[in-house]
Length: 48
Image (cartoon, rainbow, N blue to C red; front, side, top):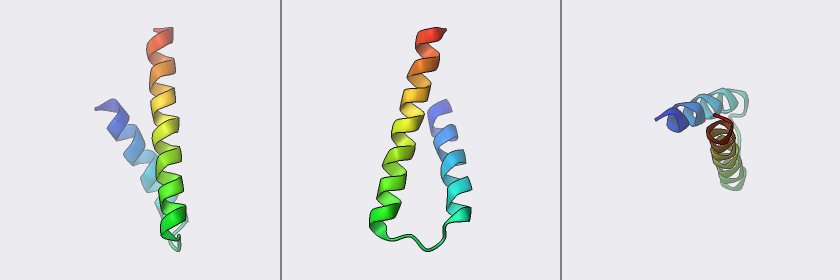
């Protein structure tokens, strides 16, 4: 659940800044966001 909340928070912030994105740009942003969130999550899990 924590991953989903972090992803939504990041997505909502960036969505407010960029309203006129193409579909390709939106998908790039989405997958970058997913990967950043997953990597961050696993870094926290490994260090804990």
